[in-house]
Image (cartoon, rainbow, N blue to C red; front, side, top):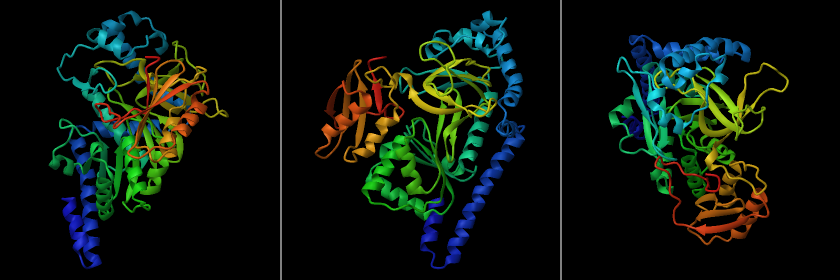
Amino acid sequence: MVNIYIEIIESGKRPIFKALCIRLMEILNTLRNFAYWSIDALKGGEVKKDFQDIEKIFGYTSFTSLKEHQKPVLDNLLNAVVNNSTFYSGCKNYKSLSDFPIVNKSIIKDHFDDITFEDQESNYLPVKTSGSTGSPFSIFQTKRKKNRNTADTLYFAKLAGYTLGEKLLYLRLWAAYYKKPKMIAWLQNTEQLDVSDLNNTYVKAMVDRLEKDKSPKGWIGYPSGFESICKSLDALNAKPLDCNIKSIIAIAEGLSPEVKSKMEYYFKAPTVSRYSNVENGIIAQQMPNDNAFRINWASYVVEILDLESDVPVPNGTIGRIIITDLYNLATPMIRYDTGDIGAFVNDENSTDNIPKLESIQGRKMDALYKTNGDMLNPFTMHAYVYDFPEIKQLQFIQHKEKKYEIKVNTNVMFEGESLLIENFKNDIGTDAHVDIQYVDEIPSLKSGKRKISVNLYKQ
């Protein structure tokens, strides 16, 4: 339908036709927004109530005040699990959240029936991850939790600059069982862009279409997909584009400074990274003009624990990201080890400032270690993609303590091999043994994501 309007705009000989069509699209966007909230109101306004609660919590400037608001919800969760979950029945005399054990995917799988509450009303909703980094993982959620996730999504999209009802460009791997029917996509004003289609020809046609469509748009997608788009635009010697993009949100993978800068250059919109997972929801997100991640304290309690022990680490120290999901009363996820690593950051001049996540460095199992044992910042490797533009794809693999492999996919004679090895050794350790392997393709995961690093040494 929108494509028809674009054709009318392009074929119109008088500016008034363009103005009318643009105004019509604005009206449609407003109607979509109104229709969504009207339907929610007819269902009891549950999403709206959650949205307003999240908005209120994000208005706090004192961590003490925030935790006081959060406390009744946390107490309700902990009291429910000790009385309804066999797994947690031994925690009935708990004094605080820290008295509960750390769990991970393996523990939840092994004790699933003991952890999950009995579904007395048969209204639990199954949630499954794709298993892109291992075996598939399934849990249950309540309708209450689903509504909370929806409110989180709408609120964090708003923080990034997106308004419900506007066109949403969604860049991911659209498997047949994920892709929405065209009518549903049109009603939701979603354009489904597939990362597997990205090449110079596709990108050129896509940006031409986006420039013709004058309606405001938001963009959400994989950073690796954004990187491919930017590399195509580089190859096309493109200039900054007039696509009326209002917000760009990177999901599922780490957003490197280089990709962030390129997206903002070409599409003239703030680009932020969102930290989320399928089993929980949105945990944190960058704000425009702030590289730190604002934590979703409205829906989660977040802890950073030592990499090797269950002890909290000081601010600024990398550790395991542990979350407690405040709203899942089906398969409760209390002190859940996400498998990701990161660090808290706080205002050193304040003792009551609300903590943020300074960095989120992806899966612990994907992190590479320097020859001296320190962890390598993963964004170091992302920078190489732009240092060597003749390379299409890169992947860094650690096999042993000091043995590494770099997979290179390029369709030209690569003359920078020695320099690439030299640069990598300067970052990873000059005593490292580094091999280069040339490949035709670096396979993506089942989800469509592609790892920049793989650690076979510490698995």
